[in-house]
Structures are given as structure tokens and as C-alpha cells.
Image (cartoon, rainbow, N blue to C red; front, side, top):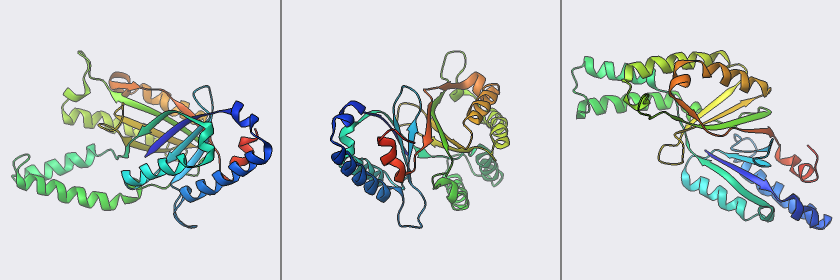
Length: 261
């Protein structure tokens, strides 16, 4: 996943002759349609959002199956003339990740029941076999299409590593318990919020990125507020900046450039 947050140079845009603006907008729409999906029936893999608030004007969210393809998206966007009016204010690189505390516990217990020593060749083979089965079963969640929701909320987060509370010193079983309780809250909102968790340890400044999609933006507040009271968030979570956007279909970009949603 790649999230890009841009400031748009409205002053320079207004100084550009109307015919030139129309030409640039038309070319940008064509380029973005090529990025949006592979083929007419392919899943949406790039989406555009009009950002609310002072942090920026446009949010691009890209899904790709490899880093080379993602880098190519950045390069393709940079080749458009519209890019001359965009100032990249923030970006976030991550990989779609599923919470596997429950399945990992079961896998470890199964390996131990067979008498395999932790991290032995037999143990590792058992874990790899289980992971392969899980990957195939959860392929649609690991390689999601862009949800067609009206609103987006994105924020990065870490787990605490302080002197008094450190997530990474908590035993696995205890972490699994807390994450199970945490997940129960998210499931209650599953019919109104599509959530994509992406891991970014070793890739970006925070440990995870959380991308939420919904038809009603107020539900973001309700979900995140409720989660703040569970143990894993109240004790062990650190949150970065929040970004909110309104879905901007590619074909409506020209109207947005003229001040119309």
C-alpha cells in the first residue's frame, strides 16, 4: 500500500490559461484511469480522495502486488503535467497485514503437540505449511480491492515501548488475549466500516497504518473512540496524525480542479 498526501497549488493553477488547464486535466484523468485498474473489469487499485482540513488537498491510495509496481505508480504520476501543481506533504508505505494471533497460537500448539522443539527444522516446516494454507484461504483479504465507500480515514500507530509499559515484553498469550478483545469491537462495526491494517515496521516511521472506509464519516469517530477504552489501545497504543478524505472519482477530477465536487 502507498498513501500519498498532496497540497495543490491553487495560485499557480488559477494563473494557468483556461484552455491549458482543461488540457492538463484531461490528460491527468486519462493517466489516472490507467492507474485505477488493470482492464475494464479489474479491481480498483488506485483511488483519489479530496482531503478535508489543513493538512492537504488530495489523497492518493494505491494497492499493488509488489514494490516495483508501486514505485512505477509514483513515477507515472510524476510524469503528468498535473504533478507540477502538486506538493507531496506526506506519504506512507506499508504492506497489507492480517492479525494472526489466534491462528499463530493454534499453529504453535499443534507443533508443540507433535513434539517439535521451537524453531527447529520440523517446527519451522509445520509453521510454514500452516501459513501457506492460511495465505491461500485469506487471499482476498491479503490482496483487497479498493472499497467503494464515500469516506476514508487513515492514521499510523505504534505499540508502546516505554519503561513502565512495553508491548514487546508482554508474553504472547497475553497479547493474543488483548488483541482478541480488541478485534471484537472492530467486528461490531464490520457492516459499516471496511478496515485494512497494513504493517510498516522497517518500511516507514510507524509500525502500522490503519485505513478505514465508510459511507458515514461519523462512524470513524465512534469506532476509534470505543476502541480507545479497551486495554490494548488505552495502555499500549500510540497514534499518529489522522487524515480524512472524501472519495473523488477519477472522472470528476476536472470538476474538482474548477472548485466543484
